[in-house]
Image (cartoon, rainbow, N blue to C red; front, side, top):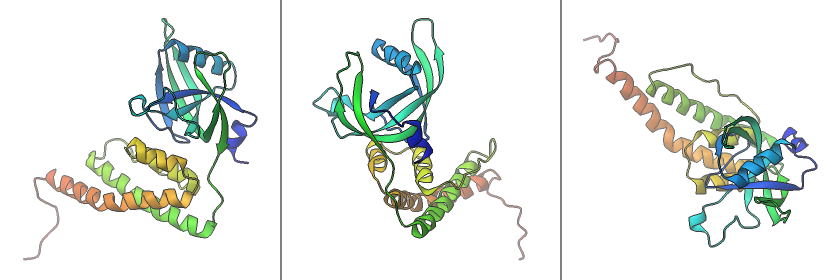
Length: 232
């Protein structure tokens, strides 16, 4: 059993926070809690194991007032809470593990509570998976280096860890400003290979343009001149 699944072991019912965004495992999510029902939810989860579920939900796109059964979401763990005098809170959460929403539970609370089943990716053949993961890591590193050049090398170039393929796939997904529909599809798939393959496709479409833009930006900083000596 993974560390993420160990964290939520024994949890059957989970407070739910429907939001118009998609949270991924290990992704940081700052939230401003202002509605009274979610102030109550935050108080309740902080007195327990500090977990609630973030489920993608766009009220304007649905005929219902809550996410449909079967929807995939991600457990959020409260890491920091800054209470404000009027009862509102600024919190920092991090994604832990995904779940399927099986059924709603009526527990008499003002917020939604779901009967959930947690899951991670299905086992796959490791040799091919790690080869694909290495390819995606290399492409992502190239994109990150190009973005760093475009920022005029401000700050320190972040080290991009070679973590296990499933975690890497979520790390890279979180780094891109993907639309919610695509991000949700990457969240709900049970195949690391499928997720990495889609990310490889996106990176291959991006990397050459990014590197070209970075080179042009570097040249523009020297008014079009380089320090290379030309033999004429």
